[in-house]
Image 1 (tube, rainbow, N blue to C red):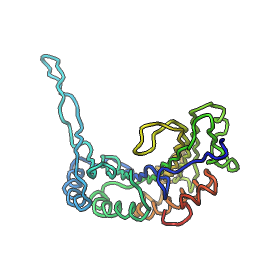
Image 2: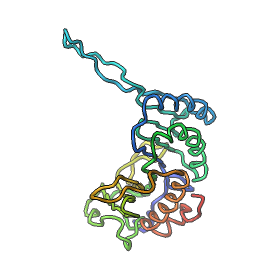
Image 3: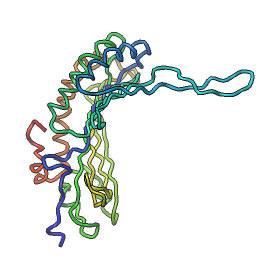
Image 4: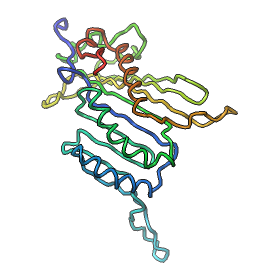
Amino acid sequence: MSATMRFDPIYPAHAIERCSATLIFGDPITEKLLLKMRAKANAVFSSLQMVVQSHPQMGFEINPQTGIATPKQMGVGSLVYSNTDRTLSCVITPGALIWNNLRYARWQPFIGQMEQVVSQLLPIVSDAVDVVSVKLEYLDRFYWSGDWDSFSIGKLLRSDKGMWAEAAIKAKREWHSHVGWFDYASANERTLINVNIDVVSAARPGEENAVPSVGILTLLQDQIFTAVDGAQAPEQAGYTDPISHLDKQHLVLKDILAEVILPEMADRITLNPPSR
């Protein structure tokens, strides 16, 4: 029976459930700069039909006579811009800018919209903070056409590249394989690579009944860090063109996923064309 069973991507053309890009600042943005970003951002996001939700930073004010603590807003906190169904969002915090898309179609629309925002907002803070880390992550999801009795991970994952912990298949149902390592480009720059595989029960979009499902998270994070152990300070303080850097990460993550899934599935989800 399992010979006729197969995996299907979450969408007909691709398997991407979520794509996220994060720009991390070397120092927290001051509240004054965050307010300047908000003033500019409202018009920028309006063109993308995204509205703001503020998440103020909360603290407590203690009455010295009674000892009673009263909740009080302590600062701007973070800004969250999203569209009507919240499938597209941007989170701006004092420490980072995060771009999320839950309805990813192709790379160019994704990075084009992000560039539209970043090109307007980053110049506001570029004299005060550096982008010291750039992170891109994809969550691809596949659904098994049968039940747990017929489940066969060998019809999705490769076993010749060492990209997941094959000992996990000893489990009778759900299992996890989380793998990560660092590559060092120089004494002050490194890359984190993560390949996390979660085998769980999940419902297909628009359906109620859960079926065996495989989520594959591939993550690439480049980081410039300060000198340690007597190493010289980095010549490059931050990533001056994070959008171009994300373009490069996108291509690398495609190659990484191609080492995780079978070539037949890579062809099925059009992994190889650069437009993915």
